[in-house]
Length: 123
Image (cartoon, rainbow, N blue to C red; front, side, top):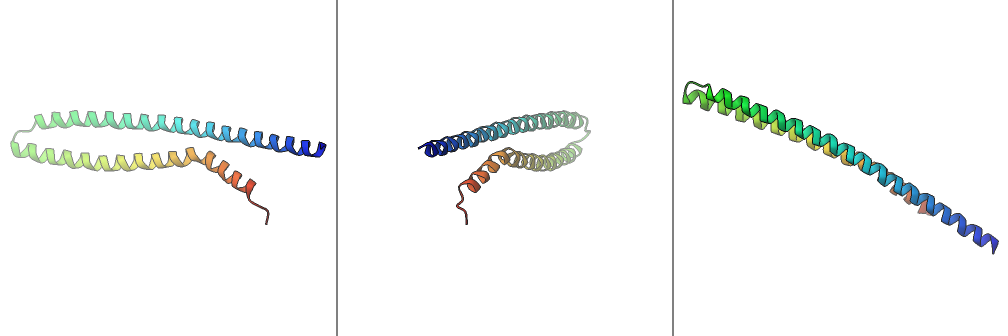
């Protein structure tokens, strides 16, 4: 009977320790996600501000053109530049987002791997 109780207590302690590790992994994952989201938000705000400033500069440049042809040529140049910047910025934000997902799920993935190792039958 004593051995059964000791076995049960040991199993309960192991389950509690594993559960504590799960909670710690979730907290760490949340911290990484929160910090990364904050960084991405700052990056997006910076890009938006730069876009706004570029738009104002482009508008000023357009108002200074002397002919319709010059305005069309400048507008085409500005539009091409805006598209190129959008593509580059989107790629950068996508890569940063994917990296954040990978980093924020790493603690949970590690716990799942640990759980799989724990319950895997001995060969």
